[in-house]
Length: 102
Image (cartoon, rainbow, N blue to C red; front, side, top):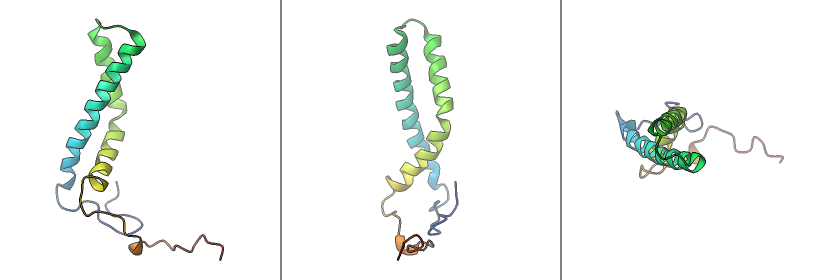
């Protein structure tokens, strides 16, 4: 992840340890994904007695979705759970008329 926004130079980590809270958001993502994978495994296989089937599919799913959880738990923390944080187009370094025809 970038330390500063490439468009407006906003520093993402507002204070030391700011993204520590994103760990809790990632935990919520993991729980939701584990439940979804377990229900999907039951619906697709119909097997309720094989515990190893569920453990293997859940851990493979959690392992594959770890990069998603890492990135989007921070995005959720930055943009939805942090009050007063928003994009300011006036600070953008991009030229708004760069791609216009006139």
